[in-house]
Length: 306
Image 1 (cartoon, rainbow, N blue to C red):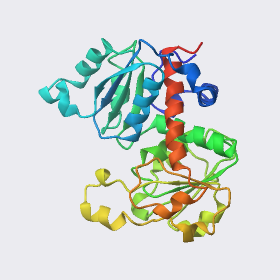
Image 2: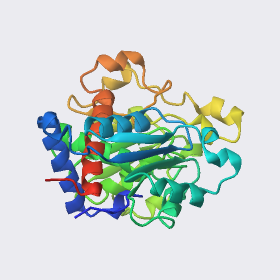
Image 3: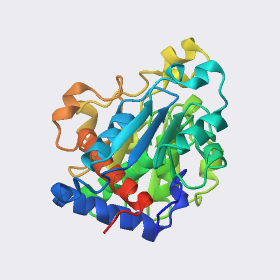
């Protein structure tokens, strides 16, 4: 059903297709040894024009755990882009060697642009500027589905840098497709959620505030994000806003006992280390779910599910 498709943003797949990925991820989690050689003989191109730890390692470990191999770069300075090669030529060249490619790029729309140069190699958007990060969304959805039992009927608080946070933009668009999901956007005035995201929501499905403590008791899910230094033009503005929210034990006293705390990582200072011991903190489990769901996605796009 998904063989040969590109995955540029969460809406590229309908809910049935997303559910098929999650069900395959569940099978991999239950019996990982059954999938050790599924991608034997296949090559993943890992093209990172922007730094990444979790996304790159998650994809690369996913492919290696499926028995496949990896080519690529994590610094465009080590590719022919440094010699002036065009992006289109790079993609077409990679398409001569690899079976599937992941692309991380600081410019919005780059992964979509790549699909115009290639037809027979699935492209996965591994994050494009402040736009979308769809496989982080798969990670987030699988985490919620497995730890909360459903993707519907939740109050979701998103806190921090909602202006530049592409993971926030993607998960809001994705969760809005499920029933009875309410959003509380928590940010300083300078980092509010973009209007184009709000335009896709009904007026009754979200509220906005700058005060985390006043709403934390309402939340089923608290999705924390860091203030992203690399997106700021002004260092002064970054320094002024970077510690606007710091989640600690004291603030969690008002939260529900079964609330879960998520974070796409890396964190800087927005979640105190003391919170790691709280059973509601699931952000490292979330990172592991990311590897499993990317294993499932690779299998689906390559059409290798038995």
